[in-house]
Length: 237
View 1 (cartoon, rainbow, N blue to C red):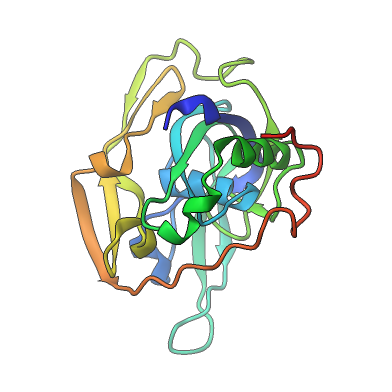
View 2 (view 1 turned 120 degrees about the vertical axis):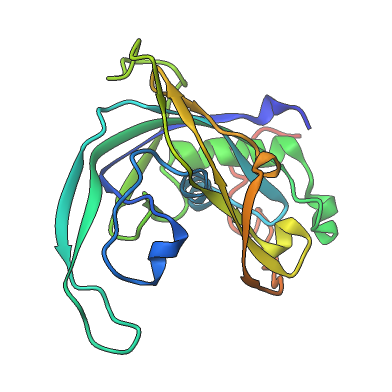
């Protein structure tokens, strides 16, 4: 599939928390300085998703200077009760994102739903409306707000800043229904930001992987777009 289906949008919020999956089990958390591929994929999935498609994040542009802010929290202990912790969030964030969708070839039951114009039309409308579901920037307490934009428009605090290299960070998960195996994998990579822009490598290009656990795919069944009232206003295809 060609990339005529690309979408572009702006996501902003008061806080963001992009973390390594190893920190999800508790304790104090500290955000990466840049958004992860998986977090941005989650944003798009909240805006619009169907089991027919897989969102691929192409690139992100950091618009505001990277700043952190610490906040106290009382996370729930797995053994019961609460503990005190300090979380380090990114503060006052804004990003421009460019992405496209591809077919989930492991869902042959959705083959009849592979209509590029239909999904592109609905995705664009959902971006204009701010998404179908609540949007979060890495964690549920970090509310995000989506609106359309043209990637590259406007001034970034990192224009003409040059290159910034980052060490090994979390890229994303390979889920069983997308991987074709009964396993959950975590991917890692070493990104670099040039003048505020980060070009993501594709999931299959990540050479560093870790098997998290065995997991059997239990893919959801799709409800028709017409039944959900999403086709109103779309052009004929």
